[in-house]
Length: 112
Image 1 (cartoon, one colour):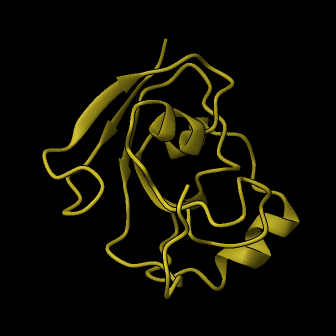
Image 2 (cartoon, one colour):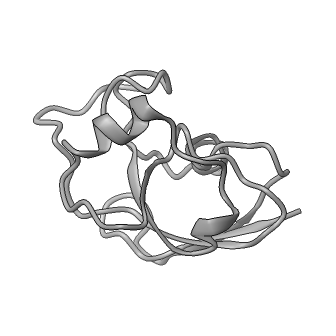
């Protein structure tokens, strides 16, 4: 099973973490399943950018971006070339290193 290394984030994962998840899982589902409560205001339906992550290692192993995700990413805070919406980024067999950006476009957090 691939391993996702999550870089430290002051709110969601202060110490950082490493989680092992099955291939075919989205990054967002993997984080949520391991109690890293990343924002996901649209309930993983690719309708917002609150679950935006930057894939520091393993980006090329993820499924390709579709047009809807590309359009939404244009609105994400802190967009970088390796940015993905974690609800749409599906793991293959390769390990990843993921950074959760400091901010999102959400002004109020959802109670998920």
